[in-house]
Amino acid sequence: MTSSTQTGPRAGFVTLIGAPNAGKSTLMNAMVGQKVSIVTPKVQTTRSRIRGIAMQDEAQIIFVDTPGIFTPKRRLDRAMVNAAWQGAADNDVLLLLHDCARARLDDETKMIITKLAEQNQSAALVLNKIDLAKPEQYLARTAELSDLFAFEKVFMISAQTGNGIEDLKSWLAARMPSGPYLFDPDDLSDLPVRLLAAEIMREKLFLNLHQELPYQMTVETESWVEREDGSAEVRLSVFVAREGHRGIVLGKGGQTIKRIGQAARRELEQALERRVHLISHVKYRKDWMDDKDRYTAWDLDFDA
Picture 1 (tube, rainbow, N blue to C red):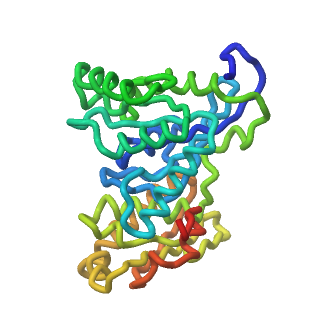
Picture 2: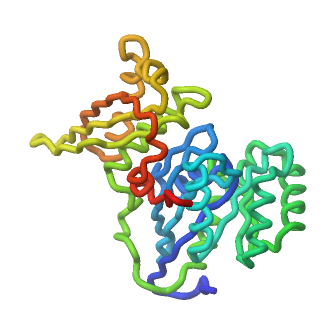
């Protein structure tokens, strides 16, 4: 274990695991200080492992945001859950996030704890969303979870409000192993800008469309052209799995995709601090969930 009194650069990986919608992406964004992973109220938003980079004292903390762990039914589901467990096995610190505002302990978290015990892995417990729960509720949940697994440390936080974040970040910094920084100290993420544009657009689709529709679509950056005036021209393709969904995404006279595209453009411009021309097309592709190349782009195992 790294001592908090140790001087010199340190760098390491912290993997965030938990049930869907436990707040993993919100926590990573809070730690980094900027949005690097998309966040929506819907579950299963994160499809691939996205890294966010935070500096604390002399430590570089590289957060790996994994997909939520649940019982998979489709190929994409299996690949997402497999990616989460791969992340859990390869880290310097493992954080299990739990939404303590839930009325009861969910089956997904119980399943994760069982597997951690079977694999003899160590983990710290982070009870998130304490701003939405009464103290007696999250203290009772802490006791319930601690009876199931010997956690290395327990933190109670609100990733949304920032309550408890600094204590967690300082503890993680002290746990990072000695060694040179793995990324430039000014970097916030290793997410390529082409994938960032697609992820931001996918987030806006999640926020503006309802029920199962967002899970049946994906977004790809078809082209990225640097203009002489310093702006970027970005062309995105939104692929839907059903022909009937195309009209829903487009909206009457193309107004829905136009509104969603404008929201994505504004956020991308803010992230890149430059002007962006965002052009979106909605296309029907029945078998996109069985396209091996897409899984490779998301760093997912097609055969999981």
